[in-house]
Image 1 (cartoon, helix red, strand yellow):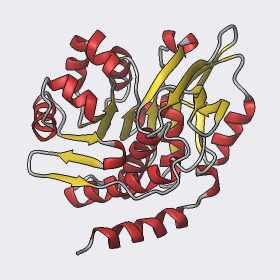
Image 2 (cartoon, one colour; image 1 turned 90 degrees about the vertical axis):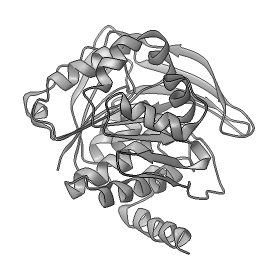
Image 3 (tube, one colour; image 1 turned 180 degrees about the vertical axis):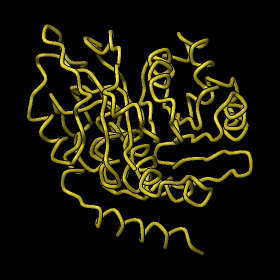
Image 4 (spheres, one colour; image 1 turned 60 degrees about the vertical axis):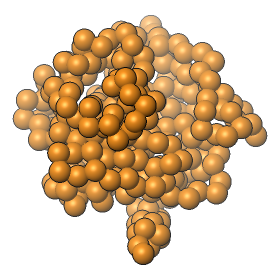
Length: 300
């Protein structure tokens, strides 16, 4: 089943304790799309400027990602993010953000995109995310990501968005900020009370927590020895999760749990290289092989 994603497409500059890389293909929708493409067909909606390298579009298209919804602003510049990771590779500082054309992003979906059944709203302005939802009235599953910026500056719109979602994905610090509690178990249920049928709280190297009306559980991260660049790990997690759900064309409890496991495994590959470098080296067979090892790791 085709999967629609709307969000940022960017150029990243990343500094780690070991190395610095510039002009990497980045953005929440980009990492999500590439991860999801191992499971199902993906339709990407985003915006870039005249400086956008066409080889990046070719790279996405080579994965079977439909880029008809990638808009180019002829007199604009692409969204650029620059960040530095701490020695622990979990914490990072944002050194510079240039929203550029993404700051005026006004997505209008191609007609065939409006018939999407599976929709993921990658990190973005809540009002824009709601505008996307209004263009896909026949959706079966709509899941979104958010961040602390929108919790602090667009809370009213975010609250309205939460009431329209089937699922929400956010990290642990965002869950605490959104709910005003330090207890993640309590935070997960409080977020669900705000509207989403299920909530996934990402905890980086400590895995992810899942909350629904009938289930609460924790899945650990896959033990990855070589962490090169964590940028996009959360987006690739969501891509693996949503890609699997769209592939299976259902979101029953067992399928949801398996989708989180696949998201965890895909994210473990993403962090093993800068940008999408490691993801370009793997296949679905590699993902399934690591998934088998992950299952064995969780059996006792």
